Image (cartoon, rainbow, N blue to C red; front, side, top):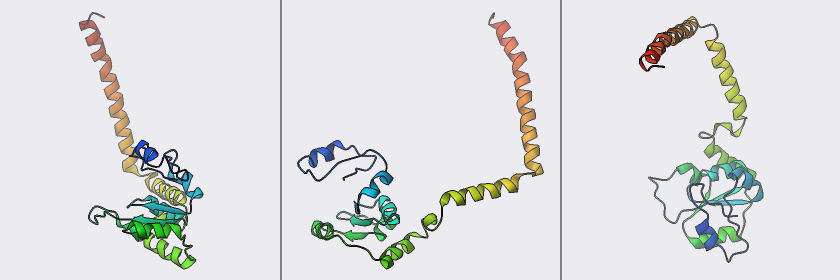
Amino acid sequence: IYRPHPAEGKTTYENFFSNRSRIIVASEGGVHDWLPLVDTVIHHDCTTAIEAMINRKRPICYKRCFDRWQAASLPGEVSECFDTLGGLADAIAEPKELTDAEWRSKEAIARPFVANLDFSAAELIAKRIAELGAKWVGQKDLVEERQRWQKNRNLRERAKDPLRALLQTRDGA
């Protein structure tokens, strides 16, 4: 499966791979739709490598032309990297099963950047929202601010009525 970056069109790739029956060019769906179907993800400095690693799919980075000043470091750090087509071809031809220790090593690299490797982000977000809500409930200044805002809104609405009447009279309505 060749999945172009979402910002790219797939026509060029469909034309290029048209005589290769084992390559499917697909841009439909997200990476999460495709990861269960593959063993390896080949990229050039793409966050998909991080998602692949989290899902224990082998990330390989092909860096023939690579500018370390413009590239994100993490996708390469969790990947096996090659700068020649020969090295890339060899890696593809001889699939490598990573050990649990190798996966844990990659996860350790990503852990400072990807907080939810060990827990559900949804649970953390819900907990934080609940904490903030509890903090804000009953705060006098927020209650007063809301009342002040409502009063000003009511004043603005009442002020519109005479202005509307004046404009209607002026416009002959």
